[in-house]
Length: 265
Ligand SMILES: NC(=O)c1ccc[n+]([C@@H]2O[C@H](COP(=O)([O-])OP(=O)(O)OC[C@H]3O[C@@H](n4cnc5c(N)ncnc54)[C@H](O)[C@@H]3O)[C@@H](O)[C@H]2O)c1
Image (cartoon, rainbow, N blue to C red; front, top):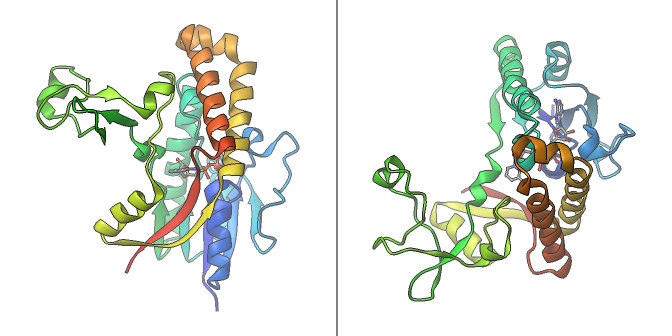
């Protein structure tokens, strides 16, 4: 009998791609997703891109009964439910903490009654890092981690290994409210290879990602006054500018967005 995988947040960007991949490999897939309006629109409808073989259970990960139902018969869980707006998390604090932290807690509580073979959790989007810099010789580089001494002194400025200051390169074009780490695909693949991972599947998702950036830009515009009141007058303009720039770069092909699977062989 094929193994059943529950993907929480399975109607989302990563979840829907993962579902396709799992189905291709012979798994059956159930998705638990509340279809939040910011991602799926106000109609609360099953997204057209979601593989028809996915059994969609509409429910909130914070609802123990919905989670228990979704876990019935599951052999493994991939936990992807999240509210993912970095800017929004700064002012919708209770809601973000509730879904991302308490929601995970409800899932783990349910898993203690219904153990499965394996639970996979998404990493943070902050793995993207904080952008490229230029050193004093003009070379573009990534900032090394700040040392413990630097952190203790509250010295946040990134420096090269010899302590010389670095200046923002690619990131200089982005306003302060957002961060982006641009890396050549070949370089990323080589980095993964270096740590023993091989890319086994990848798909370009720039078009969908651009649509998401545009939608977020509109959300910031709609909420601008409230955001400004809560986290500072500069914030809405910066968030909007960052998302406009990001959409423009994606539209022009200057940056591209990929979904990929890397496996340890
Ligand atoms: N997209 C990326 O590039 C990326 C990169 C690194 C890590 N991640 C992580 O992967 C995970 C998924 O990201 P994504 O880009 O697919 O986001 P997404 O917003 O497309 O998907 C999240 C899904 O969770 C659902 N959801 C939200 N709140 C819910 C709730 N209370 N109950 C049930 N469902 C709920 C949404 O409706 C949505 O379908 C996140 O944890 C994110 O941080 C994403």
